[in-house]
Image 1 (cartoon, rainbow, N blue to C red):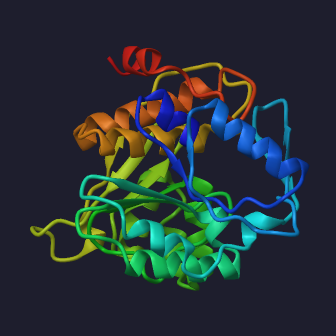
Image 2 (cartoon, one colour; image 1 turned 180 degrees about the vertical axis):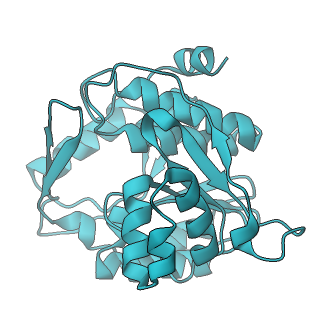
Length: 276
């Protein structure tokens, strides 16, 4: 996601915990290579975990992960940084990172310290993690259709589960359940965004808007959601209108699947050409 933000020309700052060892060294080198500011906390005595992605013939992926320093964020580390953010900045939260109990507490503290005017983009993938302190204003909750179905399953509400069979319906159901603007990524179908409005009597009355996406021959979907989120966050931070930002994000996610590798986000010129 941070690589994608850099492709858009935005400043990207990493707050992820880094330990000590060969994996940690690889992370530090990758951040430096991409021009990403490393402001994350340091964890002594333990290396970072790693993730292996197995890509199938249909371009879909399965993950095998180990845990390490990235799950050990000091309680106030993120809040201390968040207090220095300014209106117009965007805080991107990876739901996978927040799913770990220690990190969840640190994320809750950061959200409670969030300055006014800072926008939040929460990507719930690949493990569902929705902080209870998530603000209701200036936030977008992003997920793919499968994750929307998982959230519906966890809700225990059969009516919500039934409404998540299609991507458009899932966006409406997630808006009703979460009460916050929701973006459901639907692959070749594009994406659907649903937001509360003052005119509607309830969130479930909203009609989600479809965001189109270019048709591509996908060979590796690993990282497509991250490319989408990074470009969306960068676009919002740069003051690009939401409708255009969503289209740029869709194009980035689609184009990233045509190249092997999880950090294969295209250039800004390629993204804008596809959007145009």
